[in-house]
Length: 174
Image (cartoon, rainbow, N blue to C red; front, side):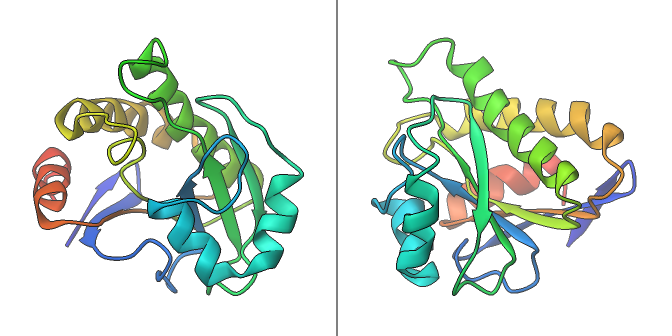
């Protein structure tokens, strides 16, 4: 099921962000050094292979809120956009830094003429950002940025568990 905002399809699905063959780009909830890690960063790096880390490590370290783009290598996508989300309770102001992650990723997608992009729930895992607070930030950014984009056709939120999926579906009414 999907919803449209300014002509861009918004989808929410349960799944593995590293296994989204219908998307031009996937977003990595990266660590500051842009190397293999746990969670999303581990899944993406393992499936993409060692060349992803070779390229991305040269672009690090990055600060919370920043985003960079690389090739996707052995993933079925063309690009990986790496974002460093804030650690909740440590990186301040959390809401602005989280918004910057999504905003910067969407701007990189636009600059690279990406038509479809997939996001995990950035910062809501090991970085401890409460999902209900994070989704408010995500929705505000999507509503702010989407009308300014001319290349993007689809944003897909790929959630790892059913509870997060329900929160995203309720928020975006998909």
